[in-house]
Amino acid sequence: MPEPVDCEFLAKLLDEHGAALELYASQWTDAPEDCVQEAFIELARQTQLPQNPAAWLFRVVRNRAISLARSHQRRRRRESLAARLRPRTDAAEAPLIDAAALSEALETLEGVEREALVARVWGELSFEEIGVVMSVSTSSAHRYYLAALKSLRKQLGVSCTSRNSSID
Amino acid sequence: MHEQEFFDRLNHGGEDDRRAGDSLNEEDQATESLLKVFEPAASGINRDRLMYLAGRASALAEAATPQPSHSLKVGGDRAWIWPAATAVMSAISLALAIALLVRPAPSIADRDERVQPAPSHRQEPQAPEAIESESLVHDSIPVEGNRVEVVVHRSDKSAPVAPSVGASARRYLEQRELALQHGVDALPVSAAPAASVARVALPQRKLLDELLPAGVRETSSADPFGEFFSWPSLNPSEDNL
Image 1 (tube, each protein chain N blue to C red):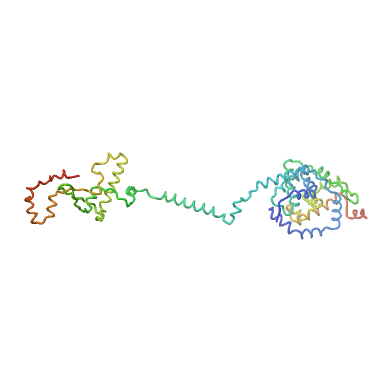
Image 2 (spheres, rainbow over the protein chains, first blue to last red):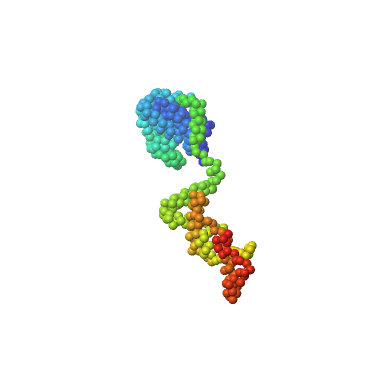
């Protein structure tokens, strides 16, 4: 039985998914904070907690970001994505690529491929959740993700061999 | 996409997701690991402000949600009573309205019947005609002097007077209407209330003739007592009380 949304649960969701949601929204708009904040407020309005609050938030953020981008008629994903990706502080080794190069490579991806990649890698959503959020099938979400990885490898010039050799 | 479909897909898509995850080859997994070295920057959302706005929105939504009233909770099993009563009363009102519309206009005879007084046990004064039709009982009452009064009582066991009762009752009602509208003085003289006891003075000579035997009656005509006393006047107008 779904329960009403309480404040502590909202705070926990914000801690776990807030940054990823902003990154996800920044694909469409340069004001992702507004979209994420509105999504959380909308979640607080719900009398019953959704069965999958994270997927629900991603879906609401996506809809609001697209709507906001259409209304403002401007997109600045490149700067936004570049500003919102940073190397992990707890990483054992330095990244092979820098954030700016990664943002530029992300710009070259198709919209659905980039969306599936961001949702999977940084949003930590499953493929069925991605499919639901994007209103596509799970296999389509998986296909978009694989296509995005392939394109990124090509753009960034990295391969499994180079990665393994760098690790070795 | 409907919300139910949204959740159904989330609940039943786990196996597909596992199959999709297993299908990643080494290259894909390496690229995925390369990307996971990066993380999204910290959220720029003002946490306190968001919590305040969320709490306010939640309170407003709860206030806007219609809550079942206490009376409905208590009478949940009997909640049909008031709607049923309302439906019954509405049906009755509708039927009465239809009956009022369909009902024919009242005729003059109906109006006259409505004027008829309700039957009562009280004895109402009757017109002289009614009294005439009743059977009379004659009682002789001796009074002072040599005068005899015959008191005529109206018998309670009188014969039915149905044919004249309707006319007399109608006449009585007309007179009552007349008296109510124009006063008692407007009543006709003949309509004076008839007394329940009518006194009629009959000539004494006639009464004596009825009582005396035939032979005596013959002699009495010669006035055998004429030399002893004089008879009172036989003028009925003088004897009437």
